[in-house]
Picture 1 (cartoon, rainbow, N blue to C red):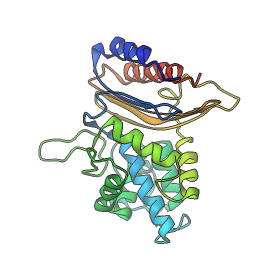
Picture 2 (picture 1 turned 90 degrees about the vertical axis):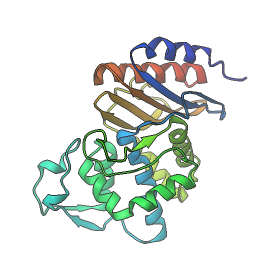
Picture 3 (picture 1 turned 45 degrees about the vertical axis):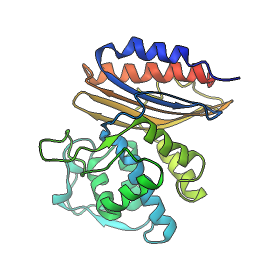
Length: 263
């Protein structure tokens, strides 16, 4: 049976009064629904998903290894989320460490080291190869929105469900790399957004990458259950607070799970 998306549209209408919301959902049967799915929003740290994909493609090509070490330099420490900016210069980190820090706690310093390693042009080329034609990685992570003269990192909800779909289907990189990326997404430590209302136990699993900035609350990921896997991207602009934005994302994700039969 086809998904009745009515309740999801009603939920977005109800929650969207206080901010600008973009949503994209792909059901376990590959049916799609979006609201402002092709509109560009500041990506914040959801941009770390295509960075991860390009790093894993480099691993597939044999250009780098997960055990490769990087010595942290003081000049690399970035403002914003993460812990590396508080740790001592000279600390040795493996590539696996950097990937975990970038995705699980959204460490900006780890992210910028990986951007430098992969190259911004190659990351954007990877985004294009995934069909993320309206999204762009325009600058490193600096812990704030772009100011005049800077390129903002931009995302559309549809582009980002497309990227996660490529990981879930094993098409973003090798099969083993895609499985590793799904496991990395499952180590997300912020369970207050997409993961808030996912049932615990049984066959339910979820993973995501959040993004947060002033007035910006985003989350992109997947929820897997007995009937299959749902993909979802929610972007909120102009939220009253991070707490309010997280409640909006969680509410939309819960309704999407109900609409698609995940729960």
